[in-house]
Amino acid sequence: MPTVIGYHDVKDSKHWLASPKREEFFGQLGVTGIRTFVDPQNPSRVAVLMDVPDMDAVVAALSTEAGAEAMAHDGVLAETLVILVEA
Image (cartoon, rainbow, N blue to C red):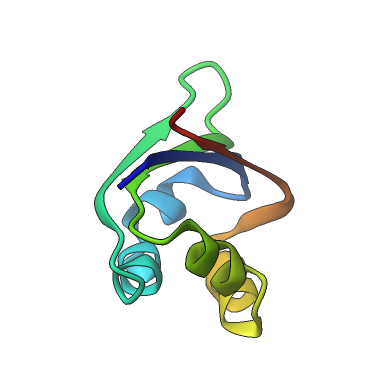
């Protein structure tokens, strides 16, 4: 199971950190070990580290309406999203 880092900008890092939406959305895809990070020099830049059993399923889910709604709920600026996969 690869470990994945997704980083992006958010409108409000406090809201993003407190939101249960991330666990709800990724949990249904079998994602585990979700950890969050905030850039101390730029609090609007955040990252999530997680273990992903099926990367194709996660990528597909992010491109659905439900994925867009989850990102919008958390204040994610989707155009800034970068995903890194453990090599």
